[in-house]
Length: 430
Image (cartoon, rainbow, N blue to C red):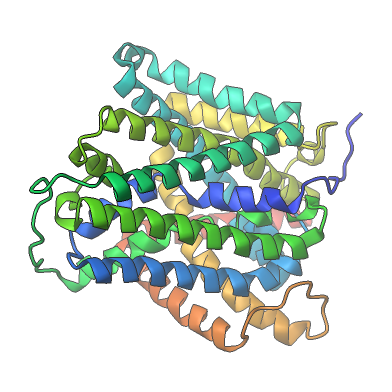
C-alpha cells in the first residue's frame, strides 16, 4: 500500500549535501575561464568571486525565513504559493517541474558527450545510452529516498574532496616558469562586466535546494533553513580555494577563454592525464545532478497534485518514501525529450523564471512580515530589514539585466503565463 503523507526521515546533513551538490556544477569548471577573459587583475578576480558568494549567502539567510515558515516539500512552488497565493504558485510550480525534466534530459546527453571523449566508440550509441543513464537514476528513486540520499551524500563528499585535492595539487606543484602567459589589460565594455557578474551569480545557483525536501526533514523547515546556510558556506570555501589555486598556479592570462580552466591549469603544471581527470570529474558532477534532480523534480509534481493542480496519482508515496508515480512521470518526460529533442528551448524558457523567482522570494519575506507578523518563524532573516533591502536591490538589478539580455525568451515567458491562466481557471472551477 502507498502512504499519502511523507515521513520526516531525512537528517539535516542531507540538506547540506543537496545544497553543496546542487550548487557545485559544470559552472565552476567553465566560469573561471570566461571571467578571466574580462578580469585580468588577480585581486579583483578573487574579490568578485568572494563578494558574489557573500551576496548569495546573504540572500540565503533572508529567504531561509520564508523557507522556515513553509514546512512543505516541493521547491519554489510552496514558497511562492504561501507568499502570493495559488495562481503564482501554479505558474512557478509547473515551470519548475518542466525545467527539471529538461535538465535531466540535457545532462544525460552531456554525460554521454563526456564519456565519448574517453571512449569514442560510445558516440554512435549516445542517445540510447543517455536514456539508460537517466533510467538508472529513476530506478534508484523507486527503491526509496534512503538510497538516493546516501548516494547524494557520498557524491557530494567525493566531489568536494576532488576539488580540494586538485586545488592543493596546483598550490604545491605550480606551473613551470615561463609556462603561464603574461596578463594583458583588457578593453571591456559594460556588457562584459555585467556578464561577469551574471556568470558568478549563476555559478552559485542552487542555494535553495533544501526547499524541495523541507517537509521531510527530521528537524523540520527550521533545520532546512539553517542547513542550507551551512551548505553555502562550504560552497564559498570550495570556490575560493579553487580560484585561489588557479590564480597562483597558472595565472589569469593562461586561463582566459578556456572552457575547462582547471584542466588547463593542470596541463600547464605538466600533470599527466589532466584533461581526463577533469572529464571524469565533470561526469561525476553530472551523475550527481541526475540523482538530485530525480529526488527534487517529482516532489514539485507531488506538491502541485496535493493542491489539485496535477493528477492525484502524483500524491502517492511508495514504501521507500518517494512519490512513485511522479518519479515515473518525470522520467517519461525526460526520456521523451532525449529522443525528440527540444529540451534546450524548454530549459532556457524555464530557467528564465529562476532569477525572478529569487526576487519574488525576497519580496515574499517582506509580504509575510506584514501579513503574518505573529506567524511561526523557526528561522528569522539575519539583519532584517537591511539585509532584505540589499538583496531586493541586487536581485532587481539582476532580473532587469536578464530580461534585457534575453528579451525574446522573456516574451515566451509572458506567453506561457498568459496560456496558464485558462488552465488554472479550469482546474480551480473543476
